[in-house]
Image (cartoon, rainbow, N blue to C red; front, side, top):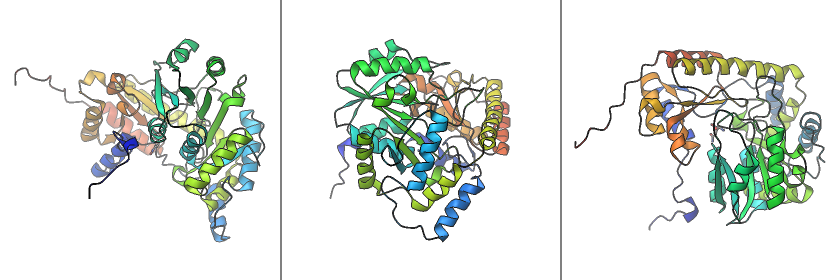
Length: 395
Ligand code: GLN
């Protein structure tokens, strides 16, 4: 029997984010590719989950999540994000922020609807949209500030555009949207009646005193926004798969329905564990930022010294660096050459762009123990890339 794969998956393959992890494991390298966030889990969070398992909190939770966690989330949203939400009606706990994104686009959009995605993008936003039958529309942002303007957004909107994705702080660029940029978005969204789907999973990781602005707090964006947040990065628990969506009661009802149908619920004992993390003192968050600021400094100065012209991120824990001068035909070739020579893995920029721009870039992730980041930085500084020979004519 011939194997039939759904047409929606045509042309989609496993992301280079994951592919580079496999390549890295194969050579026993340092993985600065996939954002695995290999750092210790805060003890109260780990203990909370262990206690929940020991207390046999092992069965399904409500599809919208454990109430104690939703109450903790609502309190946090009020004090830190400036969002006043009802924990019983306006929050759905999801299987990671990715689960929130998937549930939101399936719950609120129809096949054939257009979704505006800004380049460089997180490939899962794009590919999950394609699998949901949506039509991606694009606008490319330009380094170093990746500025968003009303003109740029307006030029990218097509007659069937129904939604726009805002990832702030951004994976992979580290860009953080300013209030002025969000106000520009609010005007365009109002004019074209767009749904705004955010991804704010890196909200707690930011530099130089920058403030995270939740898009739903700007002008009337709250009415048209699904705010997506999560715990993976703040508590270094990317494998726990816990996120949440915040929106109006009607939208959350639809998102909860899809979460129930796709996943039944997020992992129950882990929801209890993470609820304990909401009581972490302010010092925990300050230390988290100071720790990442140090890692950013080490890696970016090494990339600078290696001539790769990194774009210092404003937030999140990735940095895009330029390897165009090395002469590789593709970013994948450049990533494989770097891995072969130094045993440091990075993700090819083509994972975040459709066209040529990504082919000169690599993304490095520094959410690793200091010793790993320091050693990777040392290897990058010492790297003497073999020049890529120009294709010989007539050969
Ligand atoms: N968000 C992480 C990254 O961008 C991990 C993604 C993944 O493994 N799918 O690397």
